Image (cartoon, rainbow, N blue to C red):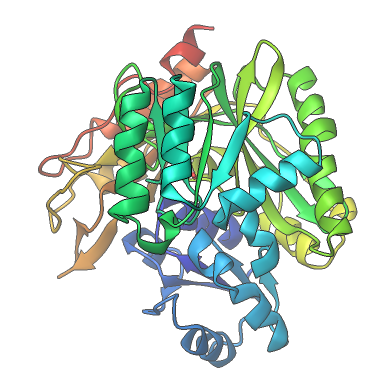
Length: 423
Ligand code: GLY
């Protein structure tokens, strides 16, 4: 099969790597890809906002299956367009992707399906949201309802911070129309867990759990990022928690969507808070998480291409999914300044050395080739992943590789999976 992967981050490099290992894979294309995906297959310089060009490339390269990485094209309807053209594609329809693209819709869906989530209200008028926050006088989480590249959620222990964020989002429109409507919800405390489920419209298969480290600073301090590292599986994702998540989150949500004539097909990501009262949903995403996917895919000991194809074909019940029992840890190496402004074009050294290390995979996120050298192009640059018999061993492998890689301004968190490793 000829497979096209849409996207250019660490998640897409990990998907390309996993798919290329399938005995059924003839060639992998990645659009637009990065320096890492260029080493797995062929990069196509496409703008994912221009569906005509993406469809034309899929036809030109005789693509049998397209897999969508990021939420943007999914929420803009790329799956509907491919299906209209008779092209096979992995991911939810535009209507189903609203579960990520419209947080107000997700909140209403959870309410109608009786899924445990933070108490919250949706506002489309600034004054009403402002008066609600002021009258409550308590810690809240403010969310712009549209897509904001992971930056639209404000955790505000002090309501004054929430009022400032509200003005930024609804009045100054720092996210444009994505901030026309907001959700204001209670701040819930606990430990975060990412759970991904493959869903083919009716069958649900919950994958091993993962834990992301979203803050830029050690000890979970500083601003939120796209994710600075991950561990898979997560210790708090016990059998008991997972079966509760299946019964009380995925099944009712998938059923409610089916009842609304919006069947879900693709990967559904539940961002959960594990509280003393049980798991509560913080958010849904309509695609694989990044960097959790990097730690997850290195543990999938099966034909990932066939598994994803079974989702597209509505045959997930027949899929043969197997796991490497060993845990994996992913450490993100980022550009100095990230998640604020940062420089790019820095030459990365040491990649050859780490390519020879056992049980280490370096997935590229923000990189490209310039004059045969790999240089930085983004905030998150590399997702360095180690596997080991224990989390401590996986960490040692990942950090051992990190220490061999150099680029100007590079930094990473040194405490990824540290708590998990001590458990
Ligand atoms: N790791 C967080 C996300 O993918 O949204």
